[in-house]
Length: 135
Image 1 (tube, rainbow, N blue to C red):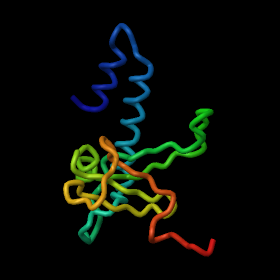
Image 2: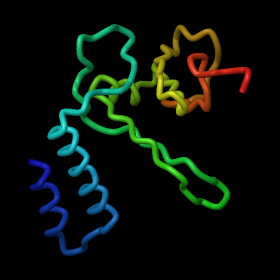
Image 3: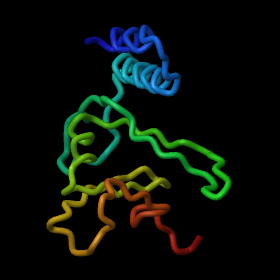
Image 4: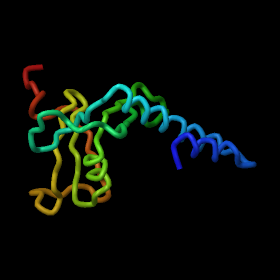
């Protein structure tokens, strides 16, 4: 079933779930945007590529005040299929610096320290690459 057919199928049901419809429309727009603009993956793959692989989805994170529920900004990072698989793996953890958007994959079975269980991404305010102790 194509993406358009999926959306039409959702719309043709007697009871239309607007949240599901909105989710599918946003996903459709993002997939088309990535394809049309030829967006490449922005994450570190550990091995140098001549050109990063094409992105298939976005990694999104909202930032703001948790107590009031106000969202100040949304971080959207294009990711490839390989990185998408890594995000769902129980053996990998992505550390992502929101300051400089650098990333590092951690292979959990060989990690030197313990990380929270069921965590696929750790967002860092600063990393060793962008840390400046004089500020």
